[in-house]
Image 1 (cartoon, rainbow, N blue to C red):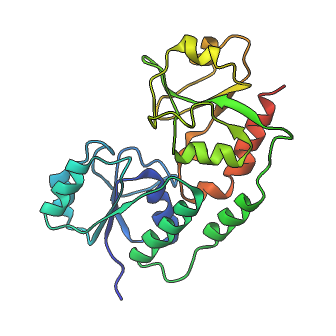
Image 2: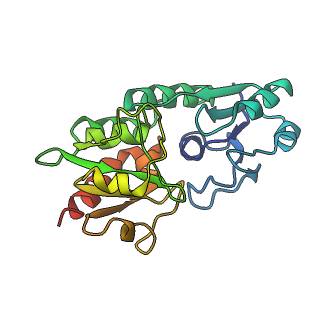
Length: 242
């Protein structure tokens, strides 16, 4: 069986395919930063892929995600006659199942070691000695936070961190800053994507509240980074308490 020619529109899936099916990936988005030195054609962003360019490449498969990629773009790719595999991920079990599905579709015949290592790492993740609450902004101007039913929220819950907005009707609600402060969380978790929070941009909005600057790749990506994510996130979150 020949190796399928794959275009990835999801950064975490790009990394998963690149390290597990060498030679399969022919193109990826501009936001696909891993693995380092990835040398494939670039086809725009996750929200604005160059549909015509992708069609010209004539891949055997396009891999996408129902949250990261827009339905009109995926419909346009299908209209162009391309096979589009769309992942749906809200929990770790879903992530592992979808990774198996994607890698199989990309011609991977044996389960990669990193995937087993990721499952093992999350079986007994490092927990806080007692539950902690955290607000998790993902944007500012306006402030937006993790709400219900998110993959990042699921990972934090597995680490013993409760999201006070986990039962909010919206998945990414807009919440005024004064309301976020009034929620009186134990800490604020500030990822570097989609908004790039830094030591100088984010923590100052929550005076007196411990802040944890975390890697978005470890908090939101489902791919090889899952194998190290519980230790990396756990270390940063515990350090924020001191």
